[in-house]
Length: 39
Image (cartoon, rainbow, N blue to C red; front, top):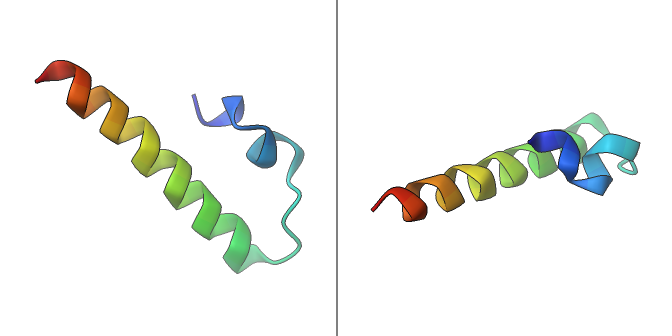
C-alpha cells in the first residue's frame, strides 16, 4: 500500500530524514483509513 504513494515510489526526497518523515505520514494515513473504515 505504501508504494501507491508516488512520492515514495520515486523517492523525490533528498535527505533520509525527509524520506522517513513522509514514510511515517503515509503509514499513518493508511492506518487511519483502515481504522475509520472498521468503526
